[in-house]
Length: 320
Image (tube, rainbow, N blue to C red):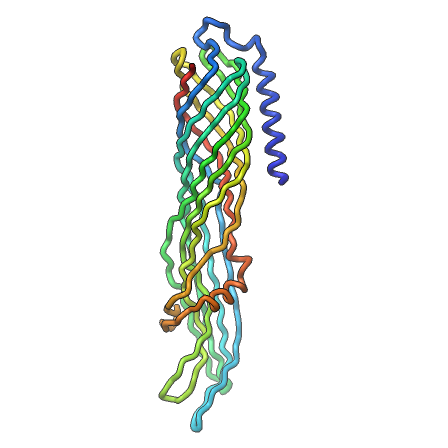
């Protein structure tokens, strides 16, 4: 909320300063090359610089006691299972495209409609490690560990801002003018990402050679993904310059910040048959098992998407 309040204070400050600069004695006189045109259309493109990154880290350690015996043999031990997983990513800069329509009431102030589309790549890295150790009551101990490699995937963050702004313009030279604009923006956001996350599991194995059941601890790599959309209202503010190369044609540069609403998502996974990391046993992981495991780390597997970004663009401006 504080961030949004500061944003609107900056917009009103920019507009006030711009109106002061755009006093009548600075407006070009009728008959010159930059004579007043009421409608301006623009097509532009340029790199967007997203602010979005994330890191989900979770770990767990647990010790269980196990005892089983037959008429001729028995086993008794403590088994410790510890695992950790990390999933991280960051949106990368990429070109976006858009356009605008300005309608000027007078030579220095008007309304602006702006539409853009930006799609950012979001590389997702993941790591996982698991350690298992047995401590038998007669003194023997064993330990195993593994850190399997996880393929790097690339997700995407798509942002379509639709803006309704107030624009003020001011004259800087015979063929150069500046502008400041800002206002409300409606955002349509799509986010997709996938990777794998490790989850600890407990299970039993029967060994016919000793006619005993053994308790095992291990982990499985579950596919995790997010694919969702949302919309909301935020704002934008920008400054720029236009260079007139003809009475009705100019070259435009614009630097803008889009402040978009945030959204919290949770990594999702599905039930299925998965191999354990250390011992390679195939387990049937049910939905209830997943819900129980994820419930323990519920806060750690949430991801907040912030599609706000800076954008520098250049293009053509047509005046009518």
